[in-house]
Structures are given as C-alpha cells and as structure tokens.
Length: 67
Image 1 (cartoon, rainbow, N blue to C red):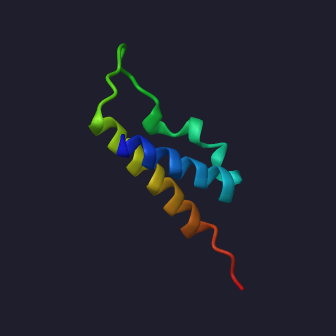
Image 2: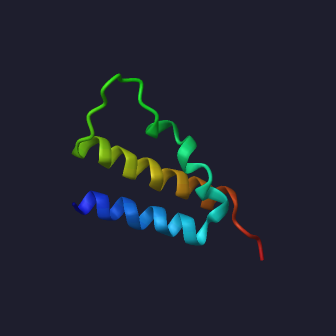
C-alpha cells in the first residue's frame, strides 16, 4: 500500500510541477515488460518508484534554470 501511495504521489508531482516530463512516463522503459504474463509484486513496484525518482532527478539536473 505504501509503495502505491508513493508512486501515486510522485506521478502527481510530475504531472503538476513538471508537465513537460509527464508525457514521457508512458515511454519509460521500466514500464515495458518482455514477459508474457508479468507479475506485479513489491520488488517490481519498488523498481518502478526508483525509476520515476531517477527520471525526475535527471530532468531537474539537466533542466535547471540559471538566474
């Protein structure tokens, strides 16, 4: 439950604060499975959460506004 809540909150933050990044969530390679019948478990959700965090971190680091 906590992982799903964290994922939802992070996606909402991306959607609200970084709309230019939100469009790429569907293209995130970690969301594409090569398995015929993928199993969604705690490990998979944790990996997805970490991939979202890394995506956002990379975006922030590479798109800083210089004042």
